[in-house]
Length: 442
Image 1 (cartoon, rainbow, N blue to C red):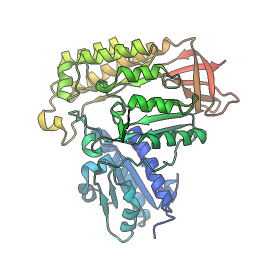
Image 2: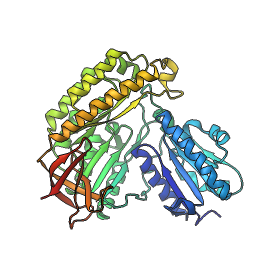
Image 3: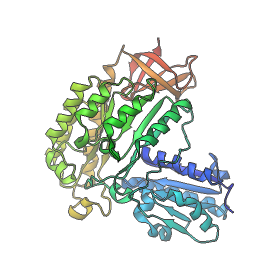
Image 4: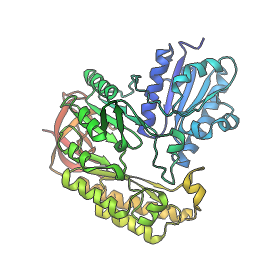
């Protein structure tokens, strides 16, 4: 029997992966396994992976080498690889990584108890079958947030955008949305347990759509229903695609104070020709139109983005167009990467990865430098402003300081008060860096 054995879960990558790890924990605990936060006492180590970028996979490969040494000390230790990397490489991983016992893709987590039972008989176990229906809607995730105030809610799985550089459609399958009732039920349960913030997650939350008989809901309607759960519950969401960021959604955000004034809207490039090669489905001008709509309908809304430097055939002029779009948009913050070719994607099939590495590095450095300036300028505009901040916990630097975020998703640090995590508090900003607002409670 494998029940009562202790499981340690490591998570790499995006918010979706962290939410998936909570689902995995729930499935296994319900089957009689125990969880541990101490890897040295684990009987089973599960590594939940990301395949979005090459360096993410390299990190995981190095981690598996480290785990191999634990297995030498404890031959009974079982190691499993979950998620996108498991789905992408499948059986080849079992050959390449001799320390692995289990491979499980994103849609096969319900099968983990059987897979774990199988490896106890001395056989490797694998399930990477993608599903057109699995949403894990009936599973209440185990929550890992140490302060118990902020939680992720997965509202849909999969992606059908097929951006040229991206592996997600191949490793997470087609889009399918959870039923509205299960999402609202999970939201209500979280609030009743003391959580005061939820983030609705999906590869492209804007394309959420659920229909049951004569009833249907798009993302704007779902977001409104979640916001109405309780006025003191903050609601965030990620990630948005520019093609699906409708005025209806923006107006829904504007009409509910507890829907946070923050939108993550990946642009990837400021060049229309590069966007076409990326198969993003919009032009520079169309993206700018969505930014203008946000500014008009939700004044003061923070906008963050993703940017890729050095995509196939990107010229210096294309790069300059990205910089100029960044300046024009004044992004509050951004996630910035150099392009790395991912096997089996449209880009790997159709294009040559022909921008030299040193050019990619230089362009990325210029993008990062500009964004640091833009982030600092954005934060400087908040000097002497007062924000309602939800306390999330203690600052990493000092137990004498709290940290939290305002509605614009900016991190705010301030001296500890008699309040507790989950409480709302007004903070006046007296100092800023490019990454943080620093203030004191009123």
